[in-house]
Length: 218
Image (tube, rainbow, N blue to C red; front, side):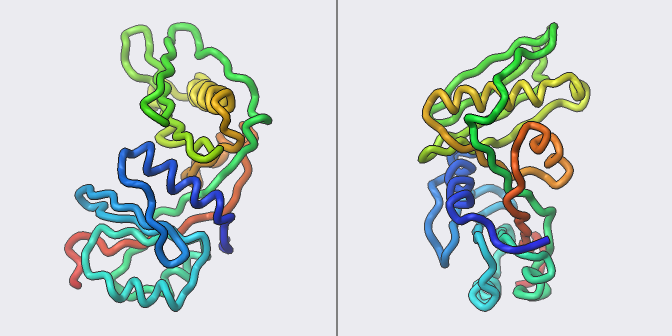
C-alpha cells in the first residue's frame, strides 16, 4: 500500500491535530507541514503528503536529535530506503475523510450513560460517562477552514460494543456540520479503520512514520 494523499486533506489534518493537541499551528516546510510539539519523546513532527525521497533523505541525515517524527504518504519500504539506519519505523496511520452532510444523524448513548458536548475554543469535546460518573467514551473535533478534524476518539475497553463510539462520532459530526464544517478528516489505526468505514468514511491513504528513538547514536 502506498502512493500520495490529497494535500488539502493532509493540511487540514495537520492544522486540526495542532488545535486539538494545543500546540502551535503547522509551519510550511519542504512541501509538507512541521509541528513543534515540545513533549518528552515527541519534539516535532514533519508530515508530507507525498515522498520526495532525495529531499527527505537529506533532511533525515541532518537530524541528530531523537523524538522528531517524519511522516509521509508512501510505501513503507520507500520511506525506510530514504533514511539511514538510525531511524526506526513506527505504526502507520490511515487518513480518512467523509462528507459531513452524508453522516447519519447522531443517536443518544445507551441507557445508563450521560453525554456532554462542549466547545473549547475551536475544538468540540464530547464525553460520555456511566452511571457512576466514570468516563466511558470521548472524542474531539477541531474546526479549521471548513474541515472538522476528529481526534482522540476513545472508548474504554469495559464499555465497548455498546455503540458509544458511534454516538461520539455522530454528535461531533452533527455539531461540526451545524457550525459550517463540510468535511470530516481523521487518521485511524489500521485496526480502527473498520469502525469509520461502517460510518461512511472513506480511506484516503496510509501514512508511514519513522523516528530516531531515544538512546540512538547521532
